[in-house]
Image (cartoon, rainbow, N blue to C red; front, side):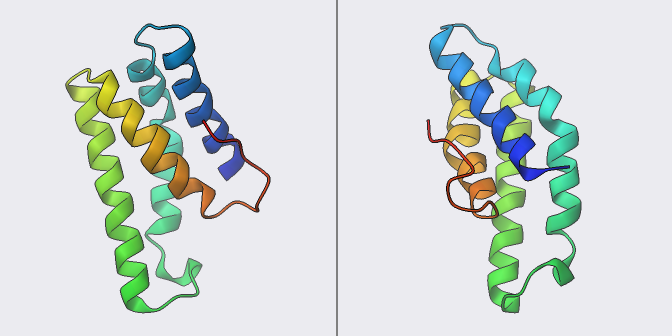
Length: 106
């Protein structure tokens, strides 16, 4: 999985939610779940990160909290919560791992 692909999928889903004024983000979030799982595999391997144990635990906990918010949003068909979590949480999380300039802002 390329992080750019995940970033693009999140960006497009959020943009569609705004532009189309209809609730597409729940279905789009469901489609992104395999990419979120792949990122979880990367995040769960401590050896992938050059940071202190405390920093790593914060990173991991933050990602897990974002995933839980996404799962809750899907379960409750809450497009507002999903937009907030994807557009302001997960999008920014993924951007931490991308080189500057390889992503767009909402």
